[in-house]
Image (cartoon, rainbow, N blue to C red):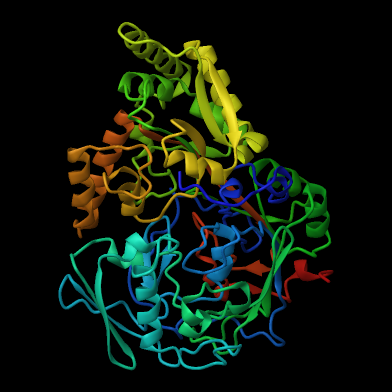
Amino acid sequence: MELKRGRLTRRAFLRAGSSGAAALALAACGGGSGNGGSTTITAATRTVGATGTRTATTTTTPTQTPLAPTLRYAGLVADDGTFDPHKTQAGPFYGQQSLVFSRLLTYASQAEGSIVNDLAASMPEQPDERTYIFRLQPGARWQAAFPLNGRAVTTEDVKFSIERQRDGDPSFVRKARWQNVESVETPSPEIVKVTVATPLATMLPTFAGVNAFIVAPETSPDGQDINLDLQVGSGPFRWVEWSPGSFASVSRNPGWFGGGGRPALSGIDIVQPRDSQDLEAQVRVKKLDAALLGRPQADALRASIPELVETTAGSASFFGMRFFTPQVPYNDPRFRRAVSIALDRRGMIDQFFAGSGEMSPWVSWPMTRWTLPQSELMSLAGYRAGPGGREQDVAEARALLAAFASDSTVPADNALFVIDEAEAAVGMGSLMRDQLKAVLDLNVTVYPITISELVTRLFQGEAPWAAGPDTGSIDLDDWLFPYFHSSGVKNSMAVRDAELDALIESQRIAFDADARRAIGHDVQRRLMAMDAAVNFVSERVVALSWPYVNGFPIDTSDGYQQRFADASIDVTHVSFRGRP
């Protein structure tokens, strides 16, 4: 689990309208709208976007006079107390930052891994596998706010942003992703040349990463953190307000380099309602144009207001567990596997998401580019389909525990450390405890603790069995290397496996997508047999909007929100009548 510091209360969880990992891990997903009919976008039906160059002026929106009003939607407004774009780990916060800051590249689809240019005028030239040459968008400028006051974005800004993370202290949590950068040169005012030490297939995803923001040196004087008052970027919107647990706002950046008259919106407001009744009331009177919801609340709201348009997408966020493998009894793969197989993932989907989700191998199911196919997954122990499949799982789990007990001692009690919000909101630890008692007669004591305490315990070996939510990742390497390579910074399981290291390293240098996917599948099969860490389930997120909203974006995790530049409100649509 990429455990996030900061606290999310049950009230905030309920305000977010979600019953799943997205809210718990501070990683709310965006939702979409449609053209008056119901639209469902899932990992299985999404159109794969091509990786390539987009021209800034090719996307247009209908001319609207006056400019379309501010879009208002209900979502989670939460941060981790760290506001620096290169340090924060709170999904809703860096999702808001993606409205304001640009990246050299960005994802057209996180699920499919399709990458396009952003602040770069085109995809980089690659004269060889170690060199990336970026040309900046002509006319790209920082927003007209202190301390940048609309000056041009320069190649020195790009150099500063990369080196700041590569050379920074450990508080730059994505430092490891930039370590392969050998040098950043600026041979001309519009050209940046990045040379890497080793050819890696992970470099384009690094430039497009959800936090790979380009920032200006003026916002980090003397190497200080970028604070809440200096959220000045070159993206389609300008920072206005951030009030955790309540409200966030951005306004249109009229000087954005994207062209085509975009953004069409005057701005965007995110409102975190007090509760479900408050949310329904605000949607009903059109004080809110859209809402991000869990399935039960979405069904209730749509039953009350049938005109609302539904869009869904799978979330990369997941509920999972991990073991500290050097410690008894978790050092025995039979014990770990017995526990993993005995846990009823379908029961988790029902309890966590009211049935609106799917089981996952290590890579969450919405990440269709890398995840194992569901058809294969459901033939494996712990995932088998139907009542007969569950009976097989139970029988195999009991046999494994019996084999363990034949030459080892089953602990009289097993301590399970669970993130307190996960226990309070969805009863994660209690469900696991009850399932294991019913299937294996295993005694489990649940210890709910804060995220910060669990982070400390994990890396000191003092939480040998832990469970909670994780925000997931986009690129295959981010799912594998940090967690399971012997040198991985998130490898609190203490996995040390030379063959696994070699497999993980091989996908990093596999530039053919099919070959890399095949390696990723092999790694996941190995991980699922190892059971050092387990991804159980991921939610299907729901968004509801009034039909007058067009182009409301949605993806598998936060960090895509710059796509609101393509959203609009049709003030001529009949459903717009009565909107205040």
